[in-house]
Length: 38
Length: 191
Image (cartoon, rainbow over all chains, first blue to last red):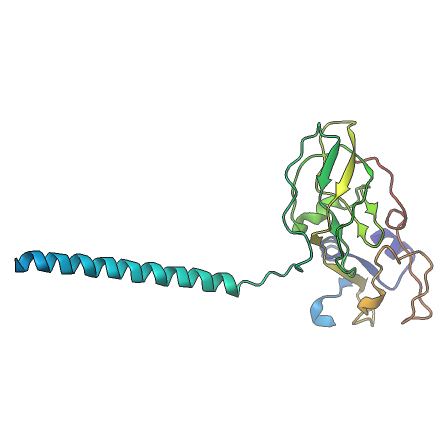
């Protein structure tokens, strides 16, 4: 799902929070929407 | 005589004090139970199924519910699974299921995986899913410079309606792309 998001330059990737947060911590180009940003 | 009377009064006082203390302690315990608020909806089954043996042909397994779908009545999803091992993993460790092709698509909910797997190589069994009781918190990842600040939950791609190419009503110029395993019944092979 993350590779699809990056390869197709999609607007957002939706998924389970834990792996998304884990990946976002390793890639400075992305961020995860948290509750505070809503 | 007065000495005996004193002892009796002292004993009675001690019994009364012990009773008062016990009643107070019970009251505190009851109050603490009342204050506890379970975050899991009441209609979601919370007790894990009993550990199952790999030799059993049918295994009760955990179901997981994608955030954004409402917990509903108990549903049973059946699907083949290989290499099962009884591990009642909490939702916090759901990342362990990432990338595994063990998803089962239900009528309304997309069951991402099961925590009940068997180590017996090559073993295959039908899995009866209980009502989903592990709620997965979903979120969205965007590029760092994306202006997106909030994503309406109404367009959360619950798998039953997250078909690829589906037009999103709130965002008429957008459409969903989903991973193939999420939109159709996955293969039975386990990693």
